[in-house]
Image 1: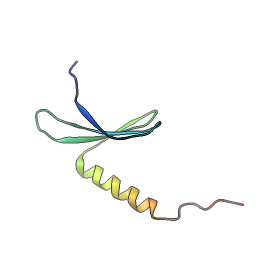
Image 2: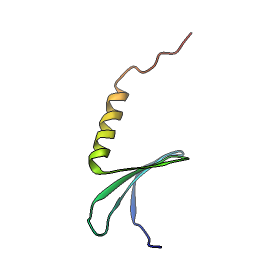
Image 3: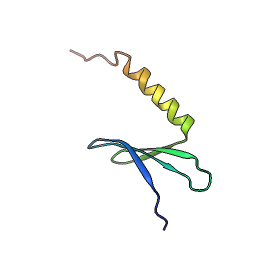
Image 4: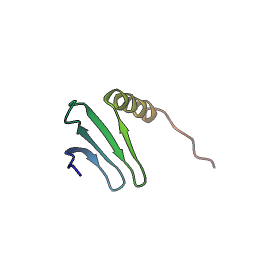
Length: 66
């Protein structure tokens, strides 16, 4: 089994974001780890996800029921 180098971009108690680089193609892959799943993104997908989060954090979100 080969060792894969990665660099952590951000980490909390429940999440970790890191990237890897393919040794052959030099393409970067972004990874989002949660407690139960890891999502893998190509750079263009990662950029789209960041934009999605940016838009989502600028909305009011669901309102609390009384």
